[in-house]
Length: 142
Image (tube, rainbow, N blue to C red; front, side, top):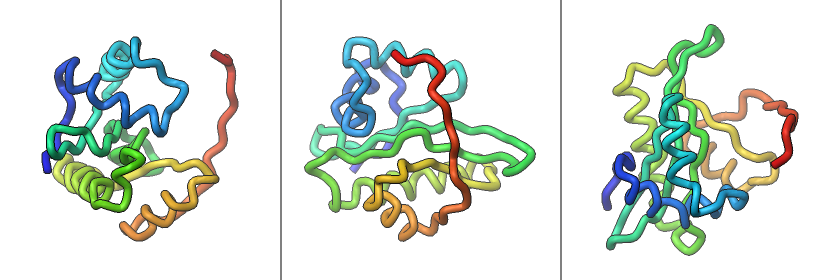
């Protein structure tokens, strides 16, 4: 099992079939461009690969604020539909938490849709807890 950060356009593009499971509004033709644009704000795309196939992906960034100090924020975390329950998500989240520790983060954060009960169970089994409600407003519909 390989865990790495996607650095080439090819690696980023290979993550698309997994990412679209979580973000179905994305379009394959502009996926690399969107990731590259977000990289300028600190976004990184990590992946788990086994047998030459991407199994799980995660988009994340490092940030700092008064409430949390330095923290890693996970934007996206998803395992390919047919690969769930095989340890890829577990390996990826553990890798991310260790990376956050290595990068001297005080906290590790992610948001999860209120309807994603299986994901909540997965996160709580990894030591994460629900600390707040996240509120949002759509300003521009695409």
